[in-house]
Length: 517
Image 1 (cartoon, rainbow, N blue to C red):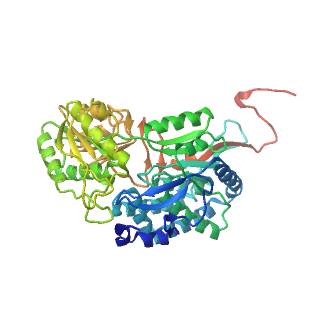
Image 2 (spheres, rainbow, N blue to C red):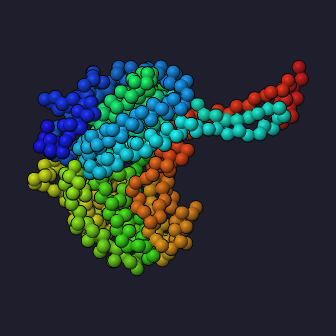
Image 3 (cartoon, rainbow, N blue to C red):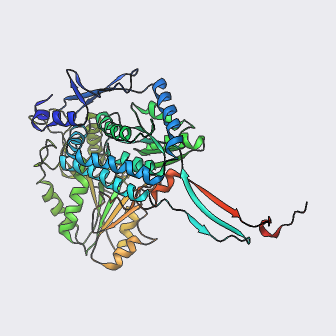
């Protein structure tokens, strides 16, 4: 156990979460994946080995899917409010273990401790939402065109739901899917990121205890782990009717094609290239707060991170100077230390992508306003700490058109009215999150209109980063079109059925067709 891990209570957190320390790191205490290769989890905070798990192989996967399929057949018959009660108890455990799980998220992924706690709070919030939803899985009634008939629609559990999540939100995105899927009556098989395997095991430990206490059928919450080859087992499996996948656009296209080939359903949450439009009527103070947090929070590794700042030429210098000044106040370091604002990138591959992006924007004619670079020396031994950077750029630069999953903010000017800013904002292939900073009601309404933002999320006077549980989360275009979390996102985890009942002694045919026998 490293000095930082000792100082900030990681050892106790692992114990609280049912992860047992060994001489070689940490094991789950249960041999979940008995036959596969060993996956080592190193913290980007200090480069220390946290623990090891074993990757899932084909034989292990078959056991998991067979168990989940059998368990689903019983679980689907439980009344939805009873399923909701199990989720409520799971939620109680999340509340009890919020601090240790938040610490593990921070230490294994690299986001600040406060963000780690916030991620667990998102889990708590979606479970609250799901418990209420368990009594509201409603359909519709409608009038039949035939006399003596009643017609309605209802929703039934879908089956086994496959969940593929990414490292940047190692627990929250899983819960967005599984809390809803559980109350809908589905079984869930989760492939967490191989970069953050221990947080996945910790969540599975919590669910396993609660499910055992309630005699939930085996397989309703299952975990597999490994690289893309393990994910391919699920995406190609006809026994898994829905695949919910979070990750890059490249990954999403592969998943979508594989699932579509077997006529399955996919829920995709892919890349974002999110912009904030800053109009002449913007509140500059709030603009700086929203832009800085959006650009550097989670070290720029959120799908909703602010990548582009589109500023009206009349206030461009004023906003630019304020943002640059704010960046000088950022403290970069150990994310478990709450005095720091920015933690590390997930690994050295991410660092290379960050460096390449800065090189590329200069090659294309951009200007660096806030210098980037990799931090070295005491406290930065992992090699994953970088300086958040700002570059002046044009929207049509190749590097600007792609999502840079790192703390690099591209700023640019627009002239004229807000229509020109919208053309820039919408001029990328991604369509996840967007925001406008303005006190002009007409600009705000234009931004939200059918001619405005083409993103799944459009905010006024708040940043692009973060989302509330009550609203559906997701984006358009190459972001994938999926929706998770609130609103009516629950419907994708169920199958819709239209029912017509004839309560007469005759069988009238539709459209007055006669068929005499």
